[in-house]
Length: 223
Image 1 (cartoon, rainbow, N blue to C red):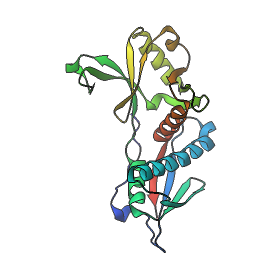
Image 2 (tube, rainbow, N blue to C red):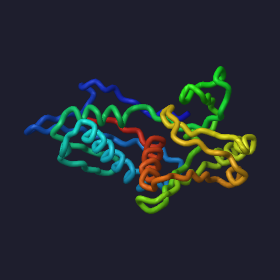
Image 3 (cartoon, one colour):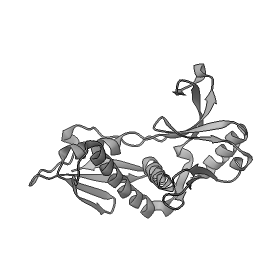
Image 4 (cartoon, rainbow, N blue to C red):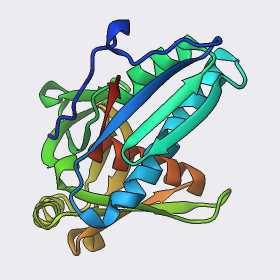
């Protein structure tokens, strides 16, 4: 499993600047793309992820207008805010480890992860290392889909593993949490893609951005 850099959350490690009641942090973005074709797309997605994390913080804390600016310059994103707690929370969220893997259902005594105390799952070896890109499709407020495109190695592995599990369910886990359960069908064992049906297309776009960035971008607070 690909391990992205993590950064200490100690306040001394943050690039914090206090001036006229504002606080800021700059994040250096280290890209680890499986294809250079997606460089501009991944930078756009990274900025969207930052914006959504800020929005999530404001909603949870019931705050408004905590951010004065979000500026992107090449592979650096600078956030200036009037709430220091936002900077700390944002840094924690962006630097936490990310994992993405497919798991098969197994007896509880053999499980690495148990869902709802009734279903046990174990890894099958197909992870984020085998993913090239995720693409979301669909109109907002309608059902949509997310297409997972695999690398050459990932395609071979996916097709072999799925062919061994036709008619069975396989779970998709992100950061160790279940996000999708699919029934393996004949169409799933061919080609270099896998389609996930999403009840709300907007969630599909958010999911694709989060996974693409989680797998292929490391955020490091910089001075």
